[in-house]
Length: 171
Image 1 (cartoon, rainbow, N blue to C red):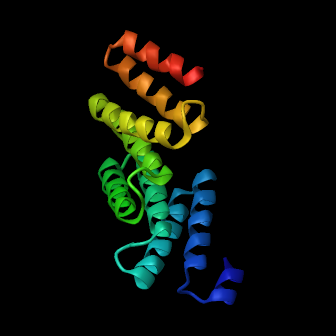
Image 2: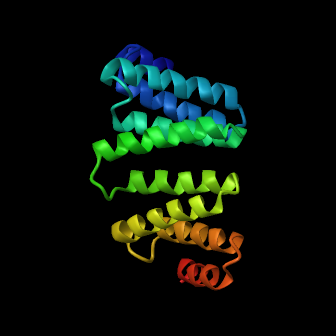
């Protein structure tokens, strides 16, 4: 981080990007407060440079921040961050985009964590459809979303549908 500051100065996308990476490392180590600080610092830089987080880098940071909030059980903050990331991504990217598919899958996981299984299923289904269009049936990202969709059907007591999606996920 210090090297990046020396090379680029405080207000540069590369500094924001490395803060996002540093936040991910802190989260992985279990230091959630430090991760949150890194993510928020990165967002401030993106705001100063682009205004209102309007960049692909900010979308990634918001998605990571939402994941952190979800891990902490702060579901309202997680939801607002995920939806902000999704809305920005939809303005920046083509309608069928890997980042959008990832965010849709993460929103599904957030709803699943809240036992909002029907909402989770809706978002997992969108992620599956997008990932199938992007990557095809035999792809790890598609399989992940298919597995999530399978679990959401199982939690709703729909064993036949759950089994069908599970089979697709492991094919």
